[in-house]
Amino acid sequence: MPKPGSRVFPGLPVPAIQPRSMSAVALVVGSTVAALALRLAIGEFDSTIPPFPTFFASILISTILAGAEAGTLAALLGLCTAWLGVGGSVPTAFTTAGLAIYSITSACIIWVCAQYRLLLRRLQEREVAGERQLSLIAAENEVLAAIVGNTPLPEILERLTRSVEEYSGNMTLASILLMDVDGKHLRHGAAPSLPNAYNQAIDGVEIGPSVGSCGTAAFRNEPVYVSDISTDPLWVDFKDLARSHGLKACWSTPIRSGSNSVLGTFALYHHEIRSPTPQEKEIVALTTRLAGLAIEQEQNRSQRQLLVDELTHRVKNLLTVVLAISSSTLRGHTEEAAYKTFQERLIALSKAQDLLTKSGWSSVDLHELVKSTVAPFIPDAKRLAVEGPGAKIPARLTLSFALLLHELCTNASKHGALTTENGRISIKWAYSRHNEDRKFLFSWSEAGGPPVGPPGRLGFGSRLIKMAFAADGGEGKTDYKVDGFSYEVALPTEQFEPGPGAPQSVGSLAFAS
Image (cartoon, rainbow, N blue to C red):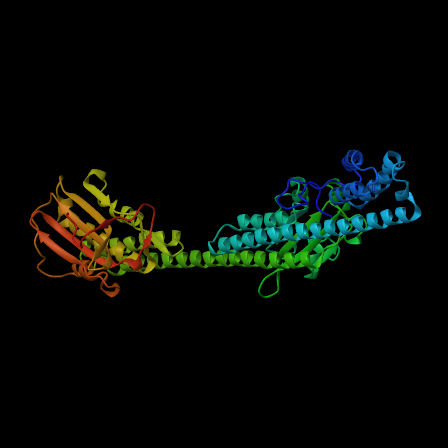
């Protein structure tokens, strides 16, 4: 049967009516009266016309709109009305044969209309199921994209539970519990529609052979379907809690890892006693696989972060040891200035490593790297101009950039713009196109300092400034101009990730300093 209120004829605003309702009775009475009025009007022209055709129309309309019971009532009411209204003018229509023909015709009309209603209801159900299936697929795709995009686990789990609830027409309440690190307790993961009091009551429950649906499913590592909480022995200790929140059925399925270990449970609660259908079991199986992927990725991410933190700690310890060894070995046996330079270079490496650690050893924001490296040399912000679009440099270039900036600052402090009160430093970078070859251009320029010239000999700092990026397709260009030293290097743009802010481009490979 079609859903009450839905259209029974495509394109026409004719809704279905709830069977056995007052609306159905009113429909039968109204259509019967209309049929009698029409028959009386026709009888004014020819009183011998058969009385039943208009009542057949009433039976058809009543059955299609309100069901077989309404059609049967219309048939009985129509027979009585016809006999009372026109029986005297057409007595032959109410003979045994005439009544038999009326009954058989009415029964055929009712059966055909009932089959139409049943077919329409099935089509409507399939249409609704198709729409829900499409929405579920879309939600699952969103969850997969969220997993790939490193969306926080609580948000992913909430999306999963809500998508299953929406698929069921919000007739179920979904819940995900996560296995604690001790492997013995279940912790709250996501349950957006369950009462908070219930979630708090089961948070931290210990798994076991008869601990509701979820605790038992996690203990057995197999699905547990409880269709009636009030009578199932698994819920003896929890049925009062469930009853207080109107929960009557609970199906729970373990969420497994790739190695088949239990990561948690996925449960569906119901406000009525019922068992799952095969289709519902398939949906739950798919949901638990997606949840397993999300949970495993989160665990792997946490493990990677733990390893990175341990590596960072060890590298810091190593730098500390190197500083201690250098202090005891080099100090007193080498020039104080040379030792201080060596020490400062190690400190610059340590700062760059801290930035890499914050980013998970993936990439570092260039603005942040420049600020952390240059700030100790130029405390007066008015003497420094930094300009460039958002850019993230890869981990393999971070240490090179850090050492390069440190050497440029050191040289400016000893020989360049930072040796005078009015000296200024300008640091710029941009994306540039030259002969269809896109480059990332970085430049350093000084002004307001003393006249400079090429060094008499190339020390470590000078060689580093010139060759810092030789292995990455870039070679530094230095210019000892009268008005100040300048440096620039061009690198392939594919080595950089866009950061906050719109990319800026310049037309050539030369900056106006």
